[in-house]
Image (cartoon, rainbow, N blue to C red; front, side, top):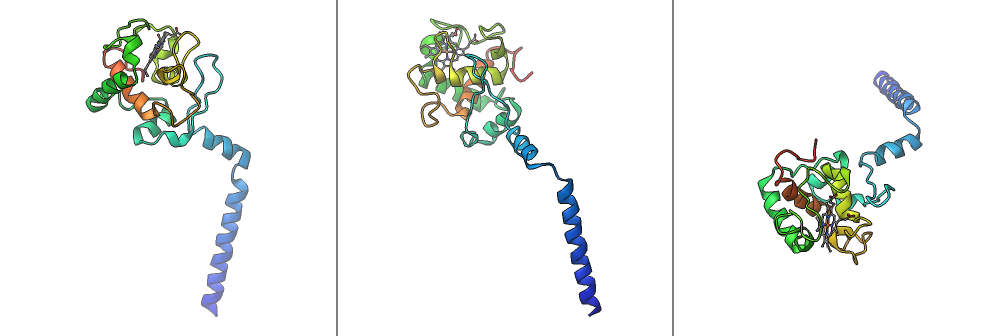
Length: 177
Ligand code: HEC
């Protein structure tokens, strides 16, 4: 009997503690905005308006980290740089930007100066590659590709590897500064 009483008072305490914790907790509207701010806010290079990219497309540890921090964890990674070089060819970036990203009909991507100043950062360059520009750069490098179709073309992880290769040409600029 005594043990039972003790147990029930412990239970009551636990419930009360739970309640008070709940009443201290933030309103659900705040929770919603906190959880969405776990992902950095991407914007279109065209007009600075929000660029929605589904969270599930960030499907590797590195891509997930990038989606939270805007920093590209592949910078300086030899495997990613080698893979990025292949992808740069596979997705025909070479046709306009040259085999060494030094420029051809499209501009050089080596920096440190860019047409879009934000491309000096990895987040900014990611947005430019993902959604294109108004001046001849198609989304994901292909003008006819629907940039909103997640099954079409480059994945975020591949963009990050391409970027690691692009940045490997300029020792001064990692884009993660
Ligand atoms: C059909 C030609 C073409 C292809 C293919 C292409 N680009 Fe571009 N790209 C351009 C042009 C032209 C520009 C300049 C756009 C502007 O001034 O608005 C550009 C701009 C860029 C920029 C911005 C450079 C700056 O100075 O700010 C990046 C980054 C870029 N391209 C990356 C890529 C990558 C990565 C690929 C492959 C996935 C790719 N491009 C494929 C033509 C192309």
